[in-house]
Every structure is written in C-alpha cells, then in structure tokens.
Length: 154
Ligand SMILES: [Cu+2]
Image (tube, rainbow, N blue to C red; front, side, top):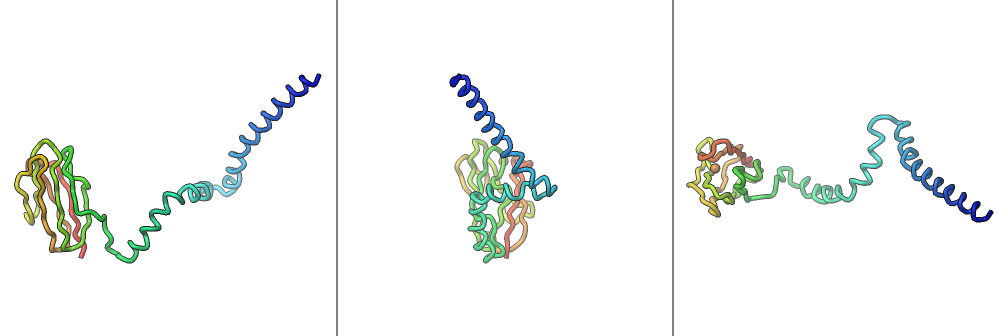
C-alpha cells in the first residue's frame, strides 16, 4: 500500500514540478502579455543585456566625451579580396596602415587620386597620413570590385 502511495506521490510531485516549471514560462509571459507590445521583451532583454551592455556603457562615457570618437583603428587588412574593416573613421592626422594578407597583389588607390599605393604583394604594407577631413573612397586597381572608405573626422 505504502509503496503504491509513494509511487503515486512521486509522479504527482514530478508532475507538480513540471507544471510549476511550465507555469514559470507562461506566468512570466502573462504580465507581458497583459501589456502587449514592446513591454514583453523589455524586462527580459534588459536583464540579459546587462552583462553585454555593460561594456558599451563603459565605453559610452568616453565616446560621449569625444563626439567624433570613431572606430579606433589605424590598420586595415587586405584579405580575401576585401578591405577590412571596409569603412574606418579616423581623426585628421591619423596614419592608416594597410597590409596585404592575401596571396594576390593589391593596391590601395583613392578614387579621387588623393593617395595611391604601389602594388602590394603578400605581407607588404602601405601607409598614408590623412591631413584633410573628408570621405575618401578607395579601391584596388587590380580588382576594382574591392572598394572601401576612409572617413576622416576633423
Ligand atoms: Cu586587389
């Protein structure tokens, strides 16, 4: 008898756990559902985003201090027939360095003619200092489909 009772209880408990677990989801969703729209994911995503987001706020103050705070990089890789990053934003006076990491030769050539590297073979680099604010689209003259942009902030 006891064994039967116990046997019956266990499934009941298990079922209860399952039910509770099941209710956990819907229960949490109900409040959100009660307020349809963006309110549903907001609380959840806010909590989950905190760890990842914490890095952004950390950098945000610094970025806020410098309105022009661009992508902090002064190096562009030429790899897989593409410039990476394809768009870089730098401050006036920054020297950019392109390095060819492909097996094929490439060039770094401004469409405006503002700068033009020699043919860069594997592992070779080219540097150009941007002294004038503006947007500089450039390409590889050997592979004209390879285009990229340098944005020079004042
Ligand atoms: Cu190329």
